[in-house]
Image (tube, rainbow, N blue to C red):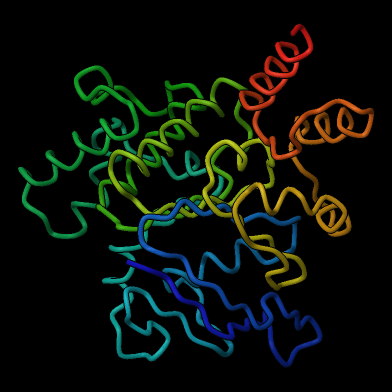
Length: 286
């Protein structure tokens, strides 16, 4: 499955005193199996864009094509599209409501009209996919879990619908460092092991540097940069001009380079930085 967006424009409250152009001539393509990071400051249009990807919002103009089907033509059942494109909103744990984790996760599959055997199968599989043991957690209340565990239950509820594309809006927001690392690791597993196409909305350059294969940068309702992390993170001045930055380790490497150290500037994760500094130390000892 792929997502193609052509000349997309969206206006909030058109023809009113509060009219606002949220998206303006957006063109992009997300290919099957990619791990995309969508970044931008508050108000850049990220959340508005992803709500178009499964038909929650209808464009003011332009087209959205999912798996070669134009979903803006009015002839497509959007419920069918939402089975293929799963969307996890920011702070999804606020949407948990059932008395047990199993009941919460099975809510979506049950609404698909599936038999109980298939529902249970999906619950077990989705819990495994997000790193929660079925027998250990199925009868627990979701409200007795840690923040990171609640987040994983909420993601499992969407994964149980078996989407081909999973879109996550700031999935690490509000979590402590361990919770953030756990969620990112599970999302990466969904991509690698289960071949899911991932669109990760984030403002954390560190998170993006760890997991994304390609980055799309938005500002003022449009796409201003896109490419692999190494390419995008070289555009420090441009990113800073729109209120963003690069990972702290990238700033460190740039500073060391300016001071005469022979280090690579194509570093955007702490692990990469550690290995690069060890390499430089080893070279200097020779």
